[in-house]
Amino acid sequence: MPLLEVDSLTVEYRARRGNVRAVDNVSFSLKKGEILGVVGESGSGKSTLGLSLIRQIPSPGVVMGGSIRVDGKDVLTLSEEEMRGLRGRKIAFIFQDPMTSLNPVKTIGAHFVELLRTHEPDLSETEALGRAKEILKVLGILPERINDYPHQFSGGMRQRIMIGLAIALTPHLVIADEPTTALDVIVQAKILDLLKSLRDTFGMALILVTHDLSIVLERSDKIIVMYAGQLVEQAERLDMQDKPSHPYTQGLLRSIPNIELADQRLEAIPGNPPDLLNLPEGCRFQQRCPYVMEHCHKETPLIDVGNSHFVRCFLYGG
Amino acid sequence: MQKIKHSILGQLIPGLSSLTKRGAAGWITIIGAVLVVSIVLMTLLAPWISPHDPSAIDVNPPPNPAPPSEQFPLGTNHLGQDMLSRIFWGGSIMLQVAVLSVFICLIIGMPLGLLSSYAGGVLDKTSSLIMDSIYAFPGLVLAIAIAATLGRGVVNMALSIAVVYIPSYFRVIRSQVLTIKELTYTEAAKAAGAKRRTILFRYILPNVVPSIVVVATVNFADAILTAAGLTFVGLGVEKSIPDWGYDLTDGRALLPIGAWWVITFPGIMIVLLALGFTLMGEGLSELLNPRLEQ
Image 1: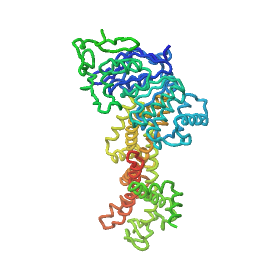
Image 2: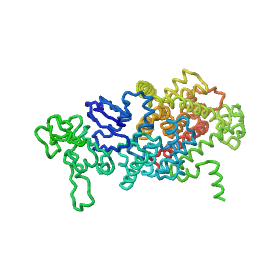
Image 3: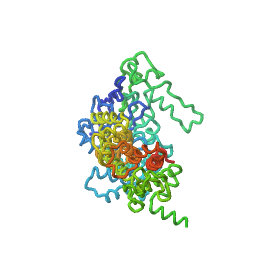
Image 4: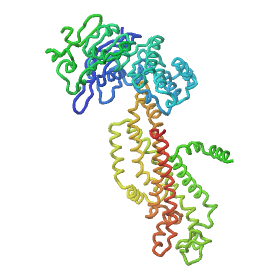
């Protein structure tokens, strides 16, 4: 049984001008210990997808349909009480901005103590602090700094602390929503490698939500590309690297700089993503697509191109 | 020597040395605190430092009011009472009323603001509506109306002032809570399985406290002025108790015959006390606002 099974999940934001379908009929699954990369630009629905997994979509977002199963249990039907037990304990979430993700009036130690004791009420404060120090060691932060406040740490260290909080209860699944967007490139690589090594140590599954395809190409087992709320391509990492199939994915790959090609010109994808309130008929990428055809105006199915590689494009049949 | 003196002061008042290093805002806070503390001390020590009984009539044999002289540095009023002693004593009621009203504001405004803005929905809409309608009245007029209904006395004065100022607490707390509850760290706490109670008391409240402190100091200044206003129109305490507000009323009647000292000195005291609290509030709001730091 897969650890996580998302089946035709649809999430809408109820806006005054109309309903925005931020996640449209998205399905995927994740095995224990797997790393899934979710790639998409701003407004593609990737963050909403991540947040809906812990049922924390910001208002006015509503899940319209589909199911999210964690260990076979449907998250969407759990009570608020059961959900609280799941959050932090089985599924942990790492937010984008490490600068504001920690409570400015609490020490780092207090963050760990509160988290551990929320889920293990029998734990004494001393024991909790001891565990926190162990975790800080793993993260490469001096355990003596446990009584420091968030503002005394750099952005990279704060994100490591956030990761530490996420793994403190050895959850089965960690969702990281753009964990490195607010950090510089060197720190970025360190944080991602830390996440990967923690996966190797603790065997938790990891969902890396990002707008940067290059990040997930190096580190994921499986990659999903989202565009305007839809899943447009899904493939194993090597497949995605060698045979990127959707014109959007190909465009994304062409816009990654390559250090070996000194005078390579980076290609941008022309145009902008469509207005989610006013979507074109059929394929949502058609206005920007170099291969646009007559029947792109029809609803595009997700086409199986073999080796569990799926593409939402008429170039591959349908 | 200078160093030792400074370190002793620093020991007595923790944070003083850091206050002096925070530029204008630090100094404004210090000036405000010095004003407030000296007036409070003066009022507390009044029984020992007053040369005369503040209520004793004709300590200066007629004719009264007598202008400032060597024997009566601030003069006497039309009843022959010593103005200096009345200044020493006269702040007591005002300070009591201010402290009590701020306390009432805190115990009602703070939980109401926190709960309703955190919970949202009908509770939030109703209490916002009530608070906004109170806010729409001119403060002093409303306080006078309530005090007139309740009658004289320290508690009644404090209550009528509290009703006027609870909306300021409510509004400041509400705006803060609405911001903080959307911040990532509250989201992150929720994502880590924290209960609503934990989020409210460990994440939101501690981050609202600096703003509450600022509102409370500004509220002190307003409460002093409103208390003075209430006594001035005769809605304060018994007339036998010395009070700057009453002396203003007497002084107003005596001003046309040239007895300027009866109204001037209590007036200055009220201004100084309110100014002290205002400066403290302004200074603190700048010091405690993390966005202005550095």
